[in-house]
Image (cartoon, chains in turn purple, brown):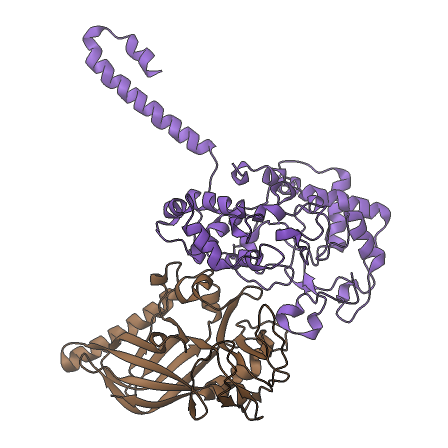
Amino acid sequence: MAPVIGATFSPFTMKKTLIISALALVSVVIGCKKDETDKGPSYEFRKPENFPEPTYTFDNNPVTEAGFKLGKKLFFDPILSVDNTVSCNNCHNQSLAFADLPLHAFSKGVMERQGIRNAPQLVNLAFMKEFFWDGGVTHLDFVPLNAIEAEFEMDEEIENVIAKLNNHAEYPALFKAAFGTDEINTPLMLHALSQFTNLMVSNNSPYDKYLRGEVVLTAQELEGLRLFEQKCQSCHSGILFTDESYRNNGIDSVFTDIGRARITSFSGDIGKFRVPSLRNVGITRPYMHNAKFATLEAVLDHYSDGIIESPSLDPSLENGIPMTAEEKAAIITFLKTLTDKDFTQDERFFKG
Amino acid sequence: MKKFLFLTTLFFSIALLSACKKDEEKATFGTFYLQFDNIVGDQDLTIADAASSDFKYTNSLDQNFNVSLLGYYITNIKLEGPNGEVFVDPVTTGAAAADVKGIYQVLESSTTSQTIGLSNVPSGKYDKVTFTLGIPADIVQEGATGGVLDPAEGAWLWNWDAGYIGFAFEGRSPASPVAASQWNPENSVQIHIGGWKDITDNPMMVNNVKTFTLDFGTSVSVSDKLEPKAHIEMDLLEVIDGHHGSADFTSTNQVHTPAGGTEFAENLHSAFVVDHVHQ
């Protein structure tokens, strides 16, 4: 626009015009920049109003655009694995709320090795007190080390990962841009990954929009919500849809995987596993730590009629959870309102 | 935590500073050294090759063994004196090794790691030291940390039950029936004492981080001209063979859980003794 304005002035006022044009141009440029920033993605961590305070130590590791993008590159890069074949993304797909494909009940690691537990979705991690099905990790930074070093996942030693990154053509400059350091070390790599995963905040499902008064739910969805509150919410509580406790939900009586007891060494915890968040549960099948159920229908049938007795069975499940077929259908309809397409289609997480 | 410790140190420094000002016009500071010397009963502890069949040491069950790895983390060091002197070694964490202060990994394999120099200790008399053995909750919960807590630099981090091994002993004993594998040599003995959480409603004691105070038996003076040293002996036999429990290597040879390490953690206090202090 500026040159056009300038062209309408007479030659006598050319100098003035140039200044004005220049000013106009500058303001247009500034204006554009501002507009672009407003419309472009934000890499700031923002706690949704109705969420609890984050557990993550953002004071040590605030999210920045450079750090987030570095974390994303690492997340998609098989350099973390021993033979450079497996990346975090292999088992954590954004389109499935960062869970694994339904085909992979147990995820595939390097050399087609099979995992031992159902890979969970990665959602609202910044708010979680503990991680993994047994809660053995209490800080998000330490989570990736398990995938990197587990023999059946990436089977790589952290020393080698750091050496590979330091010798890489691109990473040193990216770490420098993100953290201002010349040397890549373990905490910086883990901080970058945490910056990427900390922004995986899912709070734009139809249910969230219903809470904010932006959409209405159908009668069946509302009936499902009412039933959910009665029958499921004592464990899948709060806005994160988990009370973060460890419970035996009656899916087995013999436990080849002892679950929480692996961490606590307490016999009473044998067979207990973390209560998972139900956000995006409609797209994260199969279900349970051992991927026992392929569908939500099978999960609800288990709770109504399939509870298996064992010493550590959760007392609230001793008689199952009575539900009619109609009630189950309504609950499932409600659960599907927790699928957050804004999250699964958020371009910030695209590989790029 | 970082700020708290810093402020505490600052507070005491200021307190001493003002006290000194009245008496001597100006405060001075010196360095205090803690030297750790590892022993096995009445023998010096020396590191054997991981495959060595030279078994120099014997436990109370007459089982021979050697030591291929030995070390521990020390943090939250505090010196105290008979006249109210207090020095708290500041603890800081961060991603860069230079940001990590006041946390020490003492390794039998590294002579330099066995001497901890505490600088900026206010002049005065000191007669006891307090420290934490292991990495406590507040440091673990800072998240990924560099320096001696960086697993790529030799930090002892448990991935699956994330936290640090506070005390590690590895070696071999003919009494141990362990077969050779990708993780262990034949007859392996590995005792890793870790675990830092207090878990509600769990009757198992899984917080093995210990803090204890050792008396010097006398007092030594720090000043800008005096750099005393406390010589601390750590007796491995007290840890694996102490009054809270003994390791029978035929059955107790692979300890890699908090609960498994509890009895040894209880032995730690009596394993550390100030043998003497140098003025």
